[in-house]
Image (cartoon, rainbow, N blue to C red):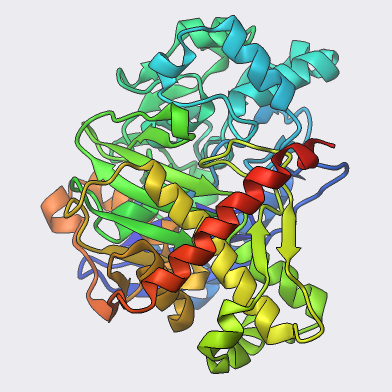
Length: 488
C-alpha cells in the first residue's frame, strides 16, 4: 500500500494505492487563498499542515488496516510557492503562491543581473517563479529577508514537518529559477543574483528516490508504520504525468484545474523561453518535460458560476450543450486572463475581458465564451511547444475540468489531437505521488508507471475546426490591441 499526498491550491488531497493499481481510498480538505492586495496571492503554511493532519486522521479512522499496510509516502504539490523560514525553521510570513503577480519589476531586475538566466534555467523570469518573489521580499520586507535561513517549496515544507528533513526534488526545484535544469543541480550564479547561496536551499534528490523517513510520533498518530520512507515526489504536473503514465517522449496531458497546463514528456532538455514555455526536469531520473501554463482555466468557470449565482459549475454548463452553431459563433470573445498570464505572453497585468456583449447574451452564452476562451489560451500554449505533426498522437485530460465532455470535445477540435479521459484520471497529483512512493520502495518504472485504462476518446471534428480557428484569430487580435491598455 502506498500513500500519496497532493498539496494543491484549493485542496489537500490524499490517496491510498495498492500494488494492483487499485485506488483504495481518497479524501481531501479544502484550502483558502488570501489576496490582501491586487496581484497578491498567499496562503498560511499552518493551514496546509492542519488540513493534512485532519485528512490523515480521517484515513486512519476509516481505513485503519490500509494505513497500517502503507510502505512509503509520496508528495506532490503546487509549484513555485515561497515558504521563508528562520534559523529555527519557523515560518516568517505567509507563503507567496504560484499565481502571485507582484514581482514583475524583480523579474526584469533578475534578467539584468543574470544574463545567463535563460541558458541556465531554460525559462524566462516570471512573477510566478520563486526567485523573483525573494527579490521582492528583499526589496520590500528587508527585515524578513535578512532573517531567512531557508526557502522551501510548499510540498517540501510539508516534508519538513513530516520528517524533519529539508529536501526537494528536481521537478519542483526546476520551477524556482534557481536550478540549472540541464545539470539537475542548484545554480550558484542565479542564487548569488538573488542574494542567496546553497545554504538557503534544501538537499536535492530525484522524485523516485527516498528523501527522508516519517517521524515516529506522526506514524503513531496516523496509524502508519514508524520510519517508513518519504519519496522525493514531484511538482503537481510532473506527479500527474507519473499518475497517468506520461513518462515517455511525446506522452502528455492537458490539465484543467485552477490553472491550465499542456505537459509533454521528453528525454532531453528542450527550452523555448522566447515563447514563455517552461522546460523543467521530470520527476524521474534522466527525464525532462515541456509545459505551457495559463493561470486561469477551471478558475474562470468557478468565477463565472459565482458571478451568475449558479448552484454549481455543472448546473451552469448544462444548457451550454444546447446552444446551436450560430449562437456559438456570435458569442462574446473571452480573454481568460483573470490572474494575468504566463504562456505565451508572460504578462502579469493581463486581465479578463468579455468582448461583444449584446442584449441576446445570456448565462449559457457567457459560459460557452469562458470555455472557448480558456481553450484558446491552451491553444496558444500548444503552439509554443513547437510540436511537429505526428509527434503527439493523443493527450490525456486530467483535473476537475476533465469531467466535462463538452470541454473535452472543444479541446480536441481546437488543438487537433484526440483527447482521452482515463479511469482515475481525476486523482491527478495524488496518484502520481503514491506511484513515486512505490518507486522509492523498489518498484520499476515499467511496473509502476502504466497508463490507466482509457474511459473515453474525443476525436477531433475536422468540420468544426475552421470556425474555431477563425474565432481564435480574433481572440489573438483582441489581446494584441488591449495589451498596452492593461498596463494602464
